[in-house]
Length: 203
Image (cartoon, rainbow, N blue to C red):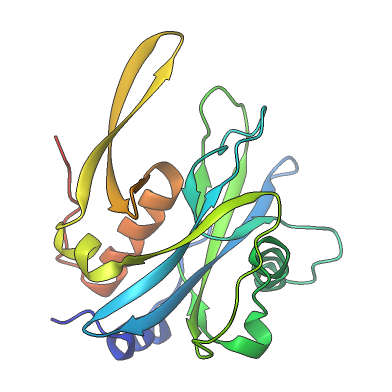
């Protein structure tokens, strides 16, 4: 089946998102999955995080978002506030909310962290909207969901820990690699769209 915005919107409307049990030390975060139609492809917006020492996601590709603040009444508000802060995009004005999808438990390398991240999906209605990234964001990139869904953009990335090389599967976007937590979110997303879909593996 074609990966259209109409199909995505209907699948989200029919989906009951999965949640994790929250404990006293559980931290919550939210991200915005922002979509637009581009010719015959549906594209998703990614940010390339700026490099900051001590940040486990430094230099990674990600969806805009971040930790829930005490003033955020709902996690959706977290996703929208963080998107405005990080790239200057007002989703309440320039986007249309499609719904919430499955939460993901984050486990960054070398960190004992109980963090649950919830993705919220939006359609970018104002395609003329301008992005003004803050100092946490090195770049804003669009990637084809169709190519990820089909496996056409699957690739292999590599990082080093204590001199040892580790390889991983990811999706190629604009010369960067979407991997780790965001890669897992995308796989959950594709599985929601098609229960028969199988994750791709570059190895």
